[in-house]
Image (cartoon, rainbow, N blue to C red):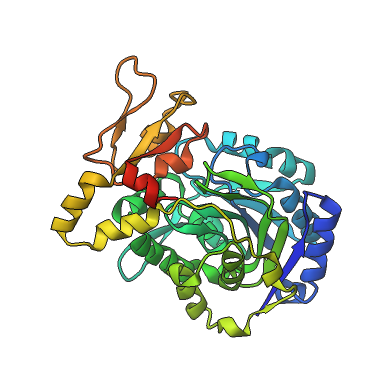
Length: 372
């Protein structure tokens, strides 16, 4: 399995196009009979491209040009989380302008119905529009993730679950291990549709990812036919230990990929970013989940954290409407929502989806020391 990497420091259309063309030379014959191609970017929420939250439109533009050269019918779609209107997400992320320029149809995964898929421990409702494509090209973003540590190609496929239905999984599987199993099982269902994976790592994110962190110029673009192999390399380049990313290990096993057999076009060790910042909330959730109750009670006196709001709040209500346990409400003339901490499960959906970066994580002294 080959993972192709190119160092590209800025969003230069010609350089990105040339890399995509060169790294996919042996790919196109495999999909010569597949006419309708769906591009699945990361369109988490309504963020401008320079915020480094969503897949940059120039990456997608280079791919669209290449697909048109191969005479493909192109669709571009995602199922953004939260309650922000999809039209606003498309407009803010640059998708409308891009798709109008190249006559590409935008599709909303929250429309068109779902296909019910049963797995070992849950039932998935997966977008029909995703499953009905002849083939999918998965175009992810290189970022940290406060709950799952890292988010890339495999995690990007969580977007096939329409809109607010994602909240049910955050409610029922709020810790890294159980939510990782959700990602693993979902991958088994949808990966057969994905024929190519591209990762936008030119400007990625560190710190409070996937949306409230700091943009970082990793200066890289990746391509690979398997999401699991791409993530195996990219996550380590960001400094993560694969042993902590069990859902990626599971995806590799499902794809029957031996990590020692993954070939990389460049000496990827030269690109390892040793000082990527990450808020390791997930680690502490795991401690709470698996510790005896008496230890939890003692620990909670000194260690706590929960979402809170800063002066950037605009009372847009995205957090209120997106909370999977209805722990938030706007009371009277309050300038920010009120959180019922007895209901809050620390899933951080509010933190992830806030379009104004108005949600931060309030921590005790011990939590400040442990969550770095």
